[in-house]
Image (cartoon, rainbow, N blue to C red):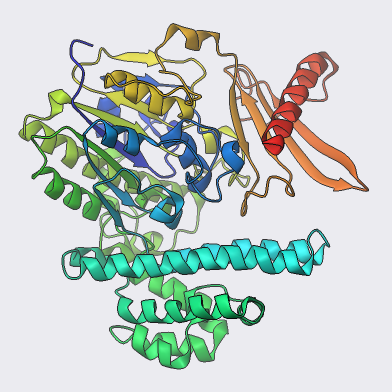
Length: 545
């Protein structure tokens, strides 16, 4: 590198599988901008996430620590050392980012270090996720794994936290007032003054009588269950009030309502809105060193446009025609009935996101910023897509879910392909090294191009499954991967006080689809025993801490 970049932009794409890029062996170039950046930058062809979904992946991305470090990922990065945003802020950079999901909010520590950090997710996603936690607590009580008083305290602690998160969200929305109205082309425009009042009342109630509150809302599954009839009228008076009111009378209609609402409004603002907001911000910061973090969710939901037009995937065929010359009928776009059709919509959605990334690159070029800017492309995890995907992937360690793109581009960087054992804990230290900033001692990753990386024998992946990261009560899952082998260790619920587990071993250099589990092959016993010892040591380490 001839000169260190002065700026850095992170462009993350939720659910982007590496094998859906040309560099990963895909037949169609659905993302020509990403392909260009990879070909002309540092591209890590063997990079994996340290876990998924997003809540599990992000601590590794921004703090270079493992998902189960520091007590796990329930509270985001609150208990972890300084994140990238804080490090860049301390170095006097202007900082910009989005909370694209309820797990990446100020309450979870992700806003720390940002000058501008905007919520672009629907407030109801907070409460749709809450049901995963409250159901888990009910299972603990039912299975006698916690006492009634522990059950009450678990619910109280969690619900108090997300009630406050909801109030904070409303405060932010009220403060924005009319300045971000374009966001509500995608998100439902609640009356946030009323939502705030309702949850301030709930906050008082749960603090005064936690037991009654928890009993009353034990079966709540979304934000609407916390509204009375009168609340409904106030909160939803802008649009669709009658439909919301109907589902209060007939809960059985709720799933159909959400399907309908999902066609009109989204869980988050789209890439178009994020790009517009970022470019507008950058127009005032062009002379400053800046750090920006954008994470596009559209591919996760197969969106191909912003606003209501996405209800019929308006631009799907436009992006397909640019990559693989396929076209879908109106009804195929509305409701894909085959994996092949779903796969094509995924390609079109990737094309849409790539077009927004191209807008950003063009802006940098037009404003003479590209030569001084480092662009980082990454994903947090893969997804279930394609005709050959026949297994559940969420929280798994199979390559369809864990292999992700990782690209570092700057005109100052000499293009290089790296095929060593890389994971997302290496993203942050690589960026700091390329930017000429000191790498903190607590980072567990290393710059991807260092000679020492050739001595790393395995990458480690880990999680506690979906829902709460209850390290002391839940079975843990650990995986080790290199270019030859994939080992998966899964604890099982203890029976009669005896620990139990199951393992899988795949020789991925010859079985890259991970179909043949060879853990029982006698010739692999020494390898399996070594991996078991490593996995059990890691489980013991995180529980002792």
